[in-house]
Image (cartoon, rainbow, N blue to C red; front, side, top):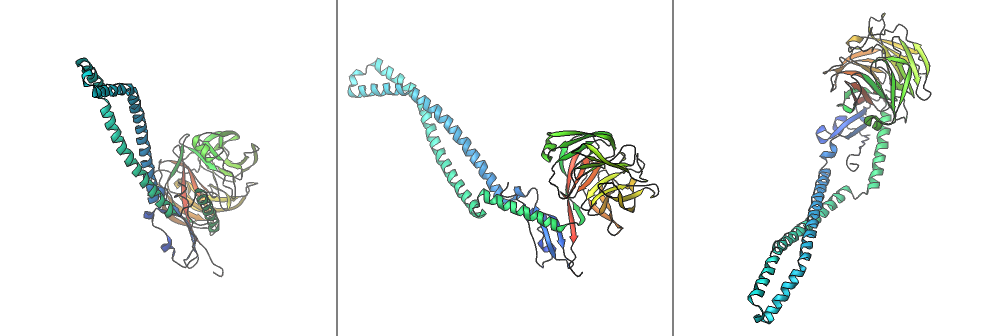
Amino acid sequence: MHLFSAMFLLLMLAALPCEALYPSPEEGWQIYSSAQDADGKCICTVVAPAQNMCNRDPRSRQLRQLMEKVQNITQSMEVLDLRTYRDLQYVRDTENLMKTVDGRLKTASENPRSLNPKSFQDLKDKVTQLLPLLPVLEQYKTDARMILRLREEVRNLSLVLMAIQEEMGAYDYEELRQRVLLLETRLHSCMQKLGCGKLTGVSNPITIRASGSRFGSWMTDTMIPSSDNRVWSMDGYYKGRRVLEYRTLGDFMKGQNFVQHLLPHPWAGTGHVVYNGSLYYNKYQSNILIKYHFRSRSVLVQRSLSNAGYNNTFPYSWGGWSDIDLMADENGLWVVYTTIPNAGNIVISRLEPQSLEVLQTWDTGFPKRSAGESFMICGTLYVTNSHLAGAKIYFAYYTNTSTYEYTDIPFHNQYSHISMMDYNPRERVLYTWNNGHQVLYNVTLFQVIKTAGD
């Protein structure tokens, strides 16, 4: 699929309206992120083929049809080979008989009187034994015609392949691979230029694996930049201590190549996050935050979150000891919780990753028990209105302006019970644990870029 499903990058520095640049979904394209200047002109737009784009590419269909024809021809040739071998063996077995009949016929032709009734009957019997050769010879004629058809099919296949090669510009595989790598580099460069943005859409769910119990959490490192590809899984929502560490996402999908970490203190809830090689989580039956370092397998720091509720005092709507929710985004490490003085409304605090000291705090005014889950993107807290089917992203709080708005961003809650939803700024995806399924969502971020002097 490298030939047709490579990711394309469109860097637009023209003065056209953004709407004119977006290929329609019917053409098989998806818009992943975009940017505009103050006048509404496109600065950088990243578009990529939809997941089923390969299947809709006419050249891909042609190649699949050619592969099917080649397979049919191969099967026909195998049948011909087997049949020819069998018939040839039969002809060889009757070779002596044919020579005997030929000799008798020559003798009878040269000396008709030598053919007495007994000799005639014997010759007749020999000819009768040769009669089965007639259908064999007929089969040879049929096979010969089939070989002619196969030869014509091969000639047609060659013509079609030549046409596809000309249409593609006759690039060899290595050249195409280099072009794909270049496009991917430009894509990542463009996404870095885009920086932060406002959430405008969530993709359909991508189920990675079905494992564990109904509740849990899974994650990758959220630190930017990072080349760490490990995946961590924590099954259950309270009193758990076992963390499974997988080498790659592929290993996580297969359930192989993992090591186990046994935490010194059990966790509460599912609001854990991995940031720069350490696990941050809420200690069971307390409002204490713990920083556990995976490499040294030790607790580096723990600190009480002042006045924060715990033990299902102010959980999300699904319960599960989800009072304290740690998360990370492009701006760093955060914690979402509630306090009695805040009357159960969601509180956001930005944390210093080394000491877990609270740097700044915001009161959102949104009741936490009415929230299904929440996550941070670019300093904005997004809150869902339920953990069940039909949920949508309903509320957004902007820490940069200390303002909020009600939103209406739908997403498909495929397995009807989300107990964890976190954003990974390095990958720009949402990680969710949904009724024993580990699921990803791509996100679409919109950004307005202010030009100098605005």
